[in-house]
Image (cartoon, rainbow, N blue to C red; front, side, top):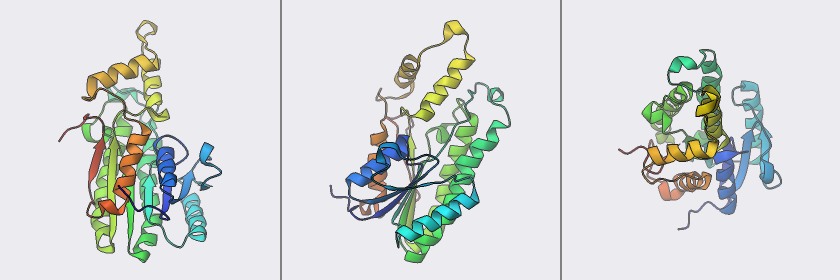
Length: 259
């Protein structure tokens, strides 16, 4: 199916690793013009895309990155926001997570989302078109105890995306969310590490064993989702093939959450 993404201008925030990098690669394969904001350079993609070091929790960085983007393209067709962090602690109960850990998670995952939206919405409103796609998580739907600050932040992402969809629809701008399930990313591994460090030595499991058991327990299809699985969904929702889809959440999770 032709997605019509050739020559589209795409900004991937958090595009240096994990799901964001997979999205950047997929858009490149469709011959889109890809720009990346991230705290790090985008590794193997460094020579193929324009990238800007950007801390989305810092208004100065975001303003500078927006000016940088404006100098490189006269329009922005697609935004994909994939930047996020976890607390680095393991819940069960929530009080295992120090209260101060909430601040950084909410700053990156919630304030960061708002900061990017405030920067990008005016560009799309001016051109009267665009697609915004936000990476949330099934954790934001089920109230996962694994990392309560992360779960709460992902729920906030879903809610704010709907607010944006309602606000921006009159300007012909679509806003949607994707909720990945179990994906092998640095963030997922950090959840295991936090669990591992909290266990008695004799009860610790290596990452592969721990993750494999969890996938078999909570994913009906019984297998991992890959970063490319998420990226493929992102490309569809960002394309004109999804022209009538806005304010929606797509779970790419092997059946983890069913409605």
